[in-house]
Image 1 (tube, rainbow over the protein chains, first blue to last red):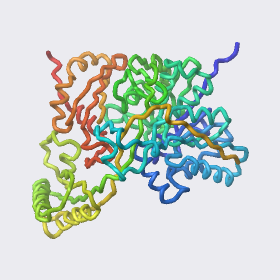
Image 2: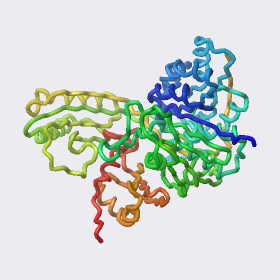
Image 3: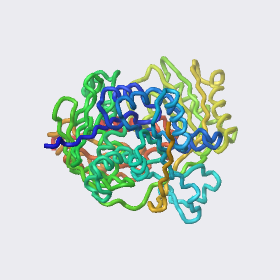
Image 4: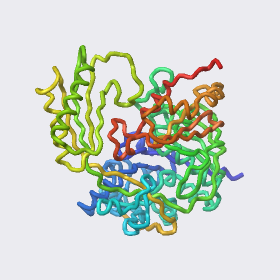
Length: 447
Length: 87
């Protein structure tokens, strides 16, 4: 009898700044076929685009070099292929840099692919296309638009896998597609077998936040305990040709994989669970069954899928003014009253200054900064006042934070620990684009 | 826009959550924090209800003035919502 083919995929990062050690452990000890690093949040690509404008050799993930130096040697010795969207706004530069690092590490015969084509900036139609969020035409933002990147599906990664690439660095690709592509490649799944693509997409969705499914977003410190969070491991998926899969982790790593941790991750950042839209398929989560088959191993079945929509989501990044954020602390008796007094003082001074702000928020951290309605009757021993405002210009933002700073000697008693921050806002809105218009491109570097 | 899933810790409690945790109740409890529409999806096999809440982040994660721009802490707040299990 021919043994059943099983593919093992590890998740090495759930966001750009994620921990690197658990990924190295997975590559070394996970008996993996693939490791996936998902590192590209909605806004990250617009920031990366700005970097690329300043230096054409930059615009990829800021931790790319550190990750590659830590992982590449182990990937080669354990024969683990690496797929990541760390290419961000510049997959070509990321692949070139990775080739240089591989050479420095003495790794030869490596094929490194850059997958791009997601940059659709030149294809925007300012007069007819409207944003999904605001329903306004793109033209209202005029020359403030920085970037436009389509969420591509599996196609570009598949080309690179078929060409034998060991390392694949993409720009904007939908997170689950990073995981689905190697499954389609290994099992020769048909691109119109939507139930199978749905199962692979669910695998990707469970894995894409790395540590979260292992209990990294679960512990409440009392009722929901997670063992050894300090050494939290990242997840491994093992899947067969029929799309039946397990989520598990390394035995000696911290955290846990249970139906409860999987449920939370399954519904994380989801709208209609019966219609999870990706560039590859409309996945259906609504009949999924999770079963613990041994300690830290959960079987997932019942996922399905329907035909894709034919449209891709495009993230449009644009300059959206500045954000001012200034804070000051009050302690002891009447801490809350002094913080409230400080708010009134600053409001009066801002009115007198005629400072132009688009929006302003007064938070009493420790009392109402996370939720305005939920009022506790606890009299806090310390309160931190936070004043955050949105302004058109940097000058206005600076004036605002400086006005809060003057509370030191022009406000209520014993305010201390002031902090001031002015940041440029790079915002994102979305449009839809025909999938046919977005053509993946692949280039290779070899060592 | 944020989504918050209410998941039964013990599956036997799901029917009461299904019955009691309604859009109206959630909207009333979260009040001004949620400016837009709330849509509710049941996922019976998981013992879960998923709420999608529009206009919850004061402009979305990339431009919100909120200290918690993602709205991650809203899930803990919703857990504080009392439900009457006697009727």
